[in-house]
Image (cartoon, rainbow, N blue to C red; front, top):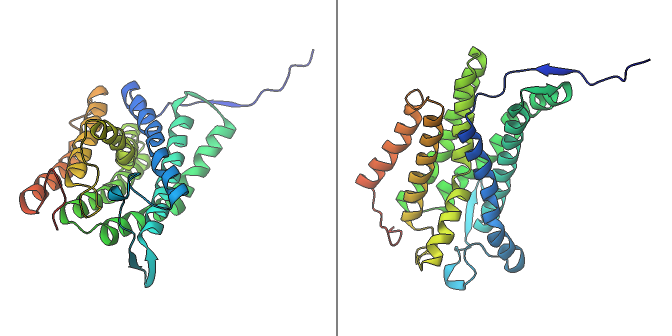
Length: 265
């Protein structure tokens, strides 16, 4: 009797993430659903921000790479690039989560890695910095929106170092850091819905996100990252990136103008 051919499988060590870390990753990616109202409003009305005219972000012409570009265009491309990168990274987490993987799964994971590093990541970074340096003008928001892509670069370089050294923990923790920072906006968007329900303000009178948004978003994502590291007993080992982001937040609050109820120039 001839046995049916089976796909070759590889016994591999799963990505060194705790159940809590993987759960936070799934929550963070699912949080992108919170952008559906904003995307639907943009598709229907061509505006970004809240549904009312008083809560819309200003649409102004920005000089980007020598070209005049609408800020709405930059926001749209930034959102698309961020989601594409998040989807690719989430796929990598799913592919590496199982201990037994087929040759096709392993090949997909190895192929997707260079695509992320050489295409999706640079595209995201270009428009992330365009948002923080050109579109956002208030000092506190500008700094806090800029520190995120900088620390994502830091996290991915750290992940590559861990991969080169064969340090699965360092690689996993660094990818966890990069993904949670990337998804800080959708995570905070869920909190914004709660704030809006309680009558809070999502945008400042000048149409920019209020400083409190950048403040609480940073605190929330740092807390979730710390919980993830604590769950696997590696909080102390990963204290440096948390300390860097926390220090930028504290220094910005100390030396830059900011407000809980608005966004001063």
